[in-house]
Length: 268
Image (tube, rainbow, N blue to C red; front, side, top):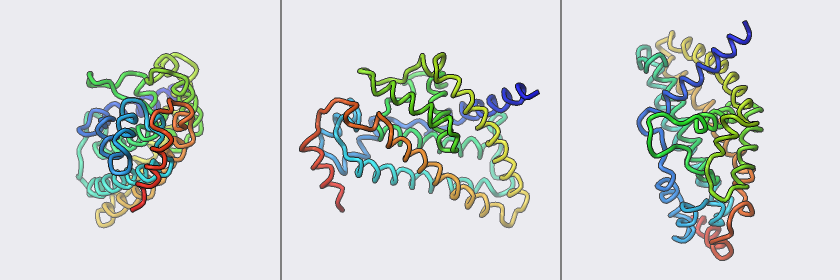
């Protein structure tokens, strides 16, 4: 019985994840995001190296990255809180396939902030340029990101292992073998199971809020603010400590004088 329940929970999360990745605007263009975010604080050369290699390789300071990460979190939190308040009105959203639309939208914003934070902290493109559905490696690393946000300890270990493999690679791309068949894959399955269970509990809590029309919208919006913000900050904190975020793990192009330029340019 337990095995069936575990499979069901894992499948429920996986289905929601795939639906969320297909929603308009959920996929972040890495190059465009980094160019837009970094241009205000960094030199042209730093921006170029950050896009062609990584922000760590460009020698961009931790202070600048933290500032940009916090701005991205604030932006996504504002959007998802307004969305959740609207969805809290009974009948506010319908279903997308078999997944409630507000649930899919909520996870879509989680995936958006996960991508933004990952790109700031020197992760490679998570999505292939072609294809509607993310491949298994992308689905699995996104599962780990969401797991970190939800506080699933196994996800922290999984992401740290992926980061170590990324830091050791010359070509920066997801370690697909490890994510789909290697030592990280069992961790992904464990995290997906936990997320499936937590997701079902969250949907139930929102269902109770919607049953009370007068306060439903306010409650849902407030609950989202209270959950999304700390979850996004939890992911930012973890990504900032990983090997991928450390300049020593990358080429040193653009460091030195450019470090000083980044530190100075962060001043208002």
